[in-house]
Image 1 (cartoon, rainbow, N blue to C red):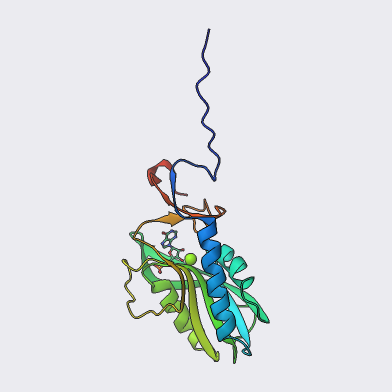
Image 2 (cartoon, rainbow, N blue to C red):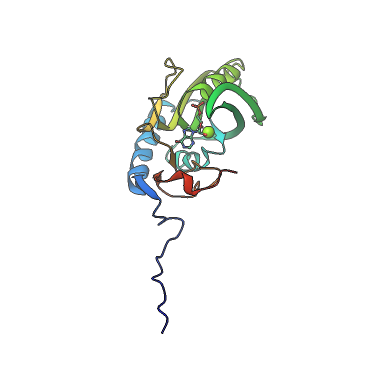
Length: 194
Ligand code: IMP
Ligand code: MG
């Protein structure tokens, strides 16, 4: 008689190669706080949230629903060139804003600040367009690898250790953006980079 091997239920969300770092509840609680803070500080101002694709899409969707103000949203897509996996600071605009930001109060919405090179360059680019103000909101802040030490993040979701994380918009080779939580990939070698 043959014995069936035990089947381990492993879906994308219960993948045993992931160690949860931030739960869905923790994330939602923190976003409500940031949303309330932005609501207080931007009352009466012409606010536009600029999401940096693709990583910020989940944070953007939750953050804007936590801001109880009239606002508009726009998106940019950039690619940062990486040398030996390190961001080089060269940023190519793949998709620009759909409307001018002159005289608007802008909050750039990012998934994570690592070296800070991408966001510094983006600030230079958007800084020349006559906005009334530009601030930064980043879901995650990984300060250890920071090269641009002077970069000021105005609204930070969570400060995390120097580990590669996925979920809640952040990917590993395009995968895991749909996780409702943030996790560390225990064994990245298990996945093929595309
Ligand atoms: P940097 O700040 O210029 O080094 O680049 C930040 C970008 O690198 C982010 O917007 C992410 O797309 C990516 N990145 C950095 N750290 C992580 C991580 O832990 N998980 C997923 N993507 C990351
Ligand atoms: Mg990004």
